[in-house]
Length: 396
View: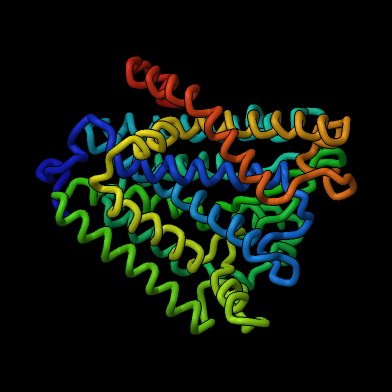
């Protein structure tokens, strides 16, 4: 690898990189579709359950698989670029550590309240903001290592963590909760009146950010080298997914099977595990993300400007969209049922017993409405961050 001091590229500029902001913006917008579906859909089944779902429900859920892995991956890229542009290693390490702690606190306070509009219920979910926090804390230590060493650690975890699938939390007895945090998502009974759903396990999510940090190096290359690298890496990941998935030998705990017709067999083929994200899940989702980075290299125009607004303020957007979507759902429930009490407290705890919800066309309509409502607040905050270089804003 070239030295940081000799490489020449867009990464050396203090301006934002459009392809990164555009990809991040698009995945943030797509992510909102999943949460709008949670709050507005009449469907009471898992959209990925082939015994119950339909292709339109399946696609509505599957497309959102692109969001979390690329969100975490790009967070790693951003950390690399921050250090490359001059932040000293010691200062970078402290920033990652403190921002990681802030993200964990945020998950169980402001974000938690947004999902439930209550802090009284005894239930929390450790989701993507939580695991990004832990990944930053780990990365705060790893940034002291050579880039190749970080790459080896990150790739090794992603490549081989599915070998741990046979290890079950109950094998650890009273310490089973540790394995739930590390690799096997589950609900942990913290006390008689409080439970925590460890949904995003540390392995392999922390490795996704570490690999993203190493991937940031490619933005130090000249344009033609960078694009060639993106095409080779992205295509290689997609090819790896296709070969391993077809073989059904390794990389995902749930083999695909032949279904009632070709379309459903394809849906089974693409139905890879997110909790925790399998090797094949990360191959296909991040592989697509890297190919999109290549496609977006020279992107411009009004549509690009629209999506990059969301990509420049991802944390502000993430928190805001949870509150907005939940609030819109309260209005919808009140207008259609004359009540919204079942939407206060543990997220979605009463949906299955109440005839609330809408078919997919209305879900998509509410998704578009939420995105449009958020545009101007996000544009305003992006302007604030551009004009004001206060340190505290870098935590938002």
